[in-house]
Length: 402
Image (cartoon, rainbow, N blue to C red; front, side, top):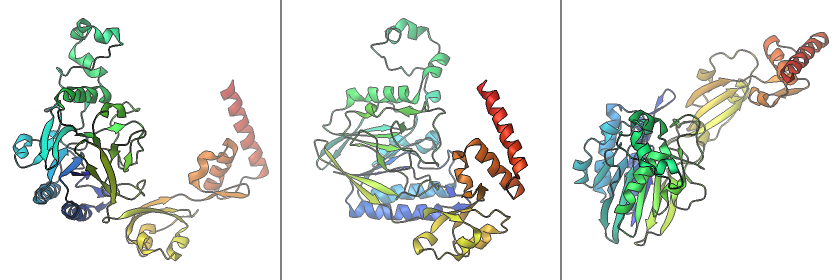
């Protein structure tokens, strides 16, 4: 059988001030065509269908039409909710939709469920693991027991804990561990697929992802997915296999949603044999704008003759002029029609060298102070002024050391 893995559509999102609704529709049109041409049996959408919990009407209609068109190709469709989605809204008709061959799951309602689907070459166990907010877990959700931990093995201790204390202890790792553990006794077919929305440790992030928790507590171990023939992940925007695995993969977003996403966008097609063995193919998404960052003075950027690939990209312009630059965005739009972000980062002189403000973090204390002086005053300090600055820095450093 053939499985198409995609995720993180973020329908309704904008790129800066520019609506992406047309680009997202182009992606869906291409995806439906790809689904038919590649004879896909199952389409998997691993969360963050929408960009926010209460999605705009046009995004809801777009998603509804996408499901109808995907089903018309003959493929079944499995959808989970992500941390951006409103689980109670997206999955409100889950079991009713099952009758149509579209399987939608969100929140904790169906934790532990295994859907046993039949395809021409045999059965497949489908385990759907939407984003599970540990603070929203039901109070009766048990906690995975660590046999090596005497306290966790003591049921009387667990029974004595109140619901509030259990909520504090819960993490993404613990609730997802419990959800997956509940499915394992129900896995019957020789092959299986897990669909999850989580931040798996070892994967590479982008700037446009919303943190699940602060300080890394939202990460989960890839070992949770051991035993599944393939794990289709959502949440991170870069397509990638999770470090140390062969079948635990993020498909990434279909479009670029930040300037950190200069990598190509893709979907993943999985050819899965009846015994669960898989081969993976990454298919580049040919629609939507790429993102580019250009750097230079306003005159340098205006004189440039960019290639068509750059012109048809969302542009962030980092302008390095030291003086005031008027109407930068309007002027650059004549050369780069899709410029959406302007950053003013003037070059500053330190001694005989010129540095971009981007590099100032690598300067010594003395160099950084002199750079700030030049940026503020417009010329290097005199010998007397430099001597006073150096003395002040030395005094401050001695106080810190003492």
